[in-house]
Length: 624
Image (cartoon, rainbow, N blue to C red; front, side, top):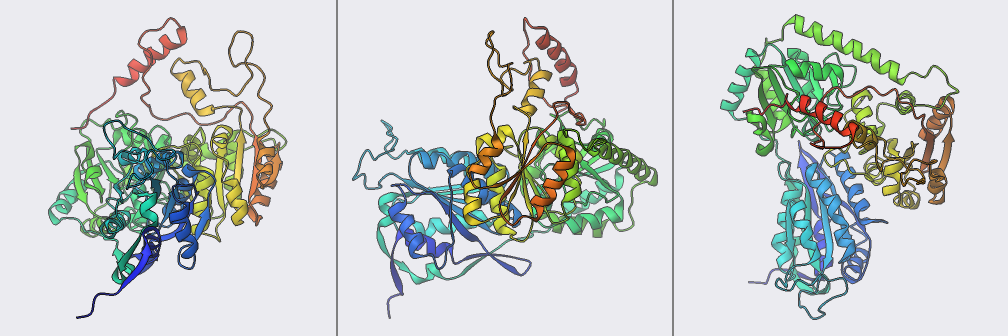
């Protein structure tokens, strides 16, 4: 009997060639699982993975990043745009490069989005000890800084021998491709092991297909769900990101068209129905619309589809106020399905929605309920039009008028990306999503600095689609470095940079909770020590230009419209810079958010805020 065929490669070379042969398949369509690798090289990965990526350039595309956290954001944006069916890998050196991954890993795992992290690690042999940048622990010699990635990873392993990769790489792919388990996956790679050679079985490099399941609902759970829906007088669907991940938008529409049940959406779920569908009520929760939140307060059955019920969505437990309200949760993850003491349908979103539609044939909500929410929706649409409208084209635009100008320019397939600041609240209430992928809000972690690198990942996934990154000045200053990558890769992302001289969102929150906007404005310090002087003389447009972007400055509503149209047609990375009017015409929050206020204070602002807090918190419910 002849010996099994083997191939002598380093651990790093074997890993890259293994990754190039992995595929997902759903509904009979195959996708490459790892479409490329982002990297910044140092002593911890340059001679291992760095050399392997050079040698394997024929099978593994490489993307040069400028910031480790940003590389993860780019990979996450890429995976989200591709429905979690494809992902990217990110490699860094040992030490600060590796710890810079932690924020991105947390974002990926919280949002249930796949990314493969390949940080360098200390010498497994301890031949060089302590290594440059190695953390020394006096009683745990096997601890490294990469252990900080354990709590934010869905799977973690340190590959201390080449042959350990055989089983661990398969486990990593299993988690990345599993819709109920996915998130950040970390394979920490000691730098000596990366360069070690091993006789790898040829079977390790054969094409491997990971089938993405669509589990159907349990018949007993389905029967209970149907009884609950038929018994409800005021049902409301809360659509989460799972609708998009499952590509269940048409299944949701079919259920809604058949039954008349209205749909409110989380930040991740917005666009599950097109904005002009008569049953689409827009965002729900603290940043939701008036119509969604009004119906949520009177709903007797809340049907969560692919949502994890974040604090914003539930208005800190104060939103669902019907005395007999019950919950029915359809989710592929049992952990999320059981939240709020709900009846459960643990299944794929599309499979579950199709099953519900089939089992509810002939059922429809009362006509008076439909008329009620449609009238509410019409009034809210008028409020959105008023917020977007600019009566004076020569005036400095407000932030909501910036969104109105953008709304008038984008096409159905454009993607609009945001994550932090005051923009998520305005977008959730006001944006009119035209397609399932258009509204790209990262609000699970609401990470400042996400937008620009995520736009790169989305643009890679959809090269023929206009991609917009919306950022305020605070977010821009956190992480603009991947502008250089966009220029290098000639990715024609469009950056809308809104200058309002500070942390506008937190400033408003600070004022509402008695902290008096302390430390939230970008202004000079004055004699009393406060930051209340003139705005800082920073020129962020010049900064974006210095990094290689084409920059269009817009001072008025008219100039803004023209600049956005020019940017949309541009074939290079382009920034539209606009300074907004200090007065805002943003529509106020429609529901509460629990941010605890100082229980005792010598300042009037805090004592008044505490009184309001105690009135609001009294409405909190624990749904059991």
